[in-house]
Image (cartoon, rainbow, N blue to C red; front, top):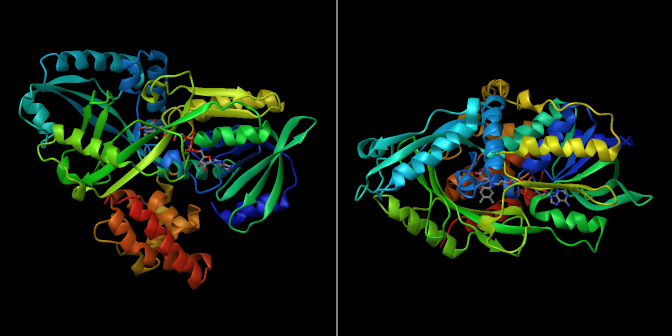
Amino acid sequence: MKRENAVQILQQSSAIWDVLIIGGGATGLGTAVDAAARGYRTLLLEQNDFAKATSSRSTKLIHGGFRYLKQGNVPLVRESLRERGLLLRNAPHLVRCRSFVVPGYQWWETPYYGMGLKVYDLLAGKLGLGPSQIISREETLKQLPTLEPRGLRGGVRYFDGQFDDARLAVCLAQTVFDHGGVALNYCKVTGLLKEGGRVCGVMARDTESGREFEVRARAVINATGIFTDDIRRMDDHAVAPVMTASQGAHLVLPKSFLPGDSALMVPKTADGRILFAIPWHGRVLVGTTDTPVTEISLEPKPFAEEIEFLLAESAKYLAKAPARSDILSASAGLRPLVKTGGGPTAKLARDHALFVSPAGLVTITGGKWTTYRKMAEDTVEKAIAVGGLEPRPCVTEGLRVHGAAGEDLRAAAELMSENPVWCEWLHPRLPSPVGEVIWAVRHEMARTVEDVLSRRTRALLLDARASREIAPRVAALLAAELGRDEQWRDAQVKEFSALAGNYLPQ
Ligand SMILES: Cc1cc2nc3c(=O)[nH]c(=O)nc-3n(C[C@H](O)[C@H](O)[C@H](O)COP(=O)(O)OP(=O)(O)OC[C@H]3O[C@@H](n4cnc5c(N)ncnc54)[C@H](O)[C@@H]3O)c2cc1C
């Protein structure tokens, strides 16, 4: 997957694309995979890096959503559990089964949550990951050795899916290329082309070169998450907004706060949400919050109250309370939610919404990472009808995601063997060798220090301080690979250092 080739195809080809997708998050990438795998000429344009917005900032769960079960949204839970099973099969290199434990401190908690999780098991049917179980106080402490033991009566253990969100996004982009499509990052859609009142393409700008393109397509799909209304307004400037956003924050703590292999799930925090503390890449990911926001940003920052809340809530359950100084990284993401009247954002459904404007712009929004494949299937079906494309069946239920056969691991190991320096660790506290930077540039379209340290490796989330320390070395490696000058390198280091500062609460 090479950006230069993708730009060249865009420059040289005047042919009409069958399907053009705006937005390279979970939804857009999934849609591009579906369309390309059906054999349609498919192009995806992403204004920044793949998964730069919401899709790299999730709790990293491929799950039915126990919360949606509590809300009574059985169809969403059933659909999500089915998708969880399919994704474990199709992307075994990125999705794994994780054990979760719900601790019980009140007499009613263990039977109550135990029953709820039995329903969860039942809804998963044949694609279940193993039966949930009520466990003793001793077993609960064995699973979660750092759990607060005072007043603990027992627990419920169940299984769910866990993944690496930004890595899955990159692999989906590679899957688009595997099936003959093109996915281009750093290419922003600036307007829609219309003919006879119908949307027939987009205007786009390569934000690296500044070059403008007019690209024609039979079906244009808006998959821009929290930016959905911006694209809808390009179609009809008076259209009423449909989106609202809610911020969710996460903290990453050292593994010592939850040393085992099981995750902690608290079904009801002080604000009525679910709290997770999950082992992830040798650290513990703690989240999340639900704060309605009006400012839409590609780089949201956790609010001080969100950090306080996560520290205070986790301190209730962990024998040693985490302090601000323990935080390795704090981040935030914005959920794209479809408005359904008033009420708190935590209660808004995570179902997806799909609609077509009078001019034929297809919009897909809402949903979850877990359901991206089904969302994509529905969207491509709609695009076939709107664009008058020859109908072809969806093939993604059994389609392996790029890298599933371990081909990239083998190729990366081969690359690493070319230069002994590439086998050195980038930082003693980070799990990435130097060669990963070279691989990310050559095969995964990484263009900036942030692309490498935030989304190709997850260094920024795992240890923001360490990631800042290695930024100069990564910038030098990138500059050599991409043929950039010293000025570019210095600007990259400055930009990344400022960004990493936002992940370190004062
Ligand atoms: C805190 C939090 C926790 C979550 N946890 C989970 C979880 O554990 N499991 C789960 O299943 N789901 C989870 N979700 C939900 C999931 O992350 C989202 O539903 C999903 O990532 C949304 O993907 P998307 O592609 O619709 O949006 P995005 O990822 O935001 O992608 C939209 C893309 O469109 C691009 N774009 C915008 N305008 C333009 C333009 N003009 N030209 C080109 N490109 C453009 C943006 O740059 C962006 O990359 C969570 C969400 C949050 C916020």
